[in-house]
Image (cartoon, rainbow, N blue to C red; front, side, top):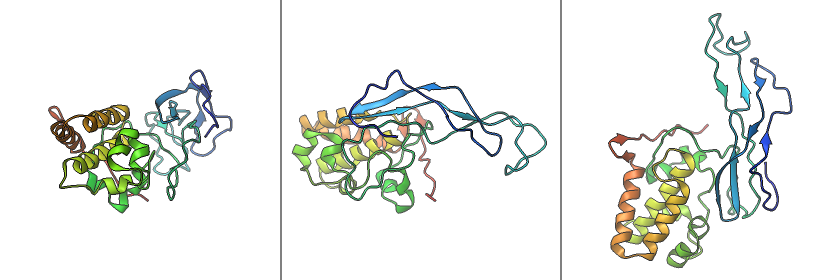
Length: 229
């Protein structure tokens, strides 16, 4: 859901007000809103699971059997208050469920450009301007008309490579909570690189590239994309 203006929602709760039906799902207790991030006049909130299913599935459920199964939470479209400003870029349809995944995932720029994975563009869209995504420092370097989609195609130049890997890291941070660089960290590193030397820009691009490739210390993080329906 969306709210005009910038109300303080830090002490608000979300709960299911209608009785769910099918497969025995039941409403759980009210959950406090948790702020995911706050930038560019937009705040994103999430809540813990609001629905649960019984240990014994009902006969109508697919794959139901007589043996009891462990209770699992059912993830539902979140109560997600996000102010309406700034408006989405032209041609971009806001997704139904923009919550990032709790699973670790890191995908390279070429995966983000594949049409079968377009549904993973959640908070921003291909037509979102680089200046809007990264702020005035990026606007001064790349102009106000360049889109994230165009930025993903950059190569052959230090700052175009930086933009390609920075935009990819931004998308990964929106998509996966455990991604090596949180969203605000991606933006901060990007701005510092643009304000620093060319060597700093290149090193930041290489660090983003490693993170986007799933290299995190001694661990290896896969890209957990599946074809969009």
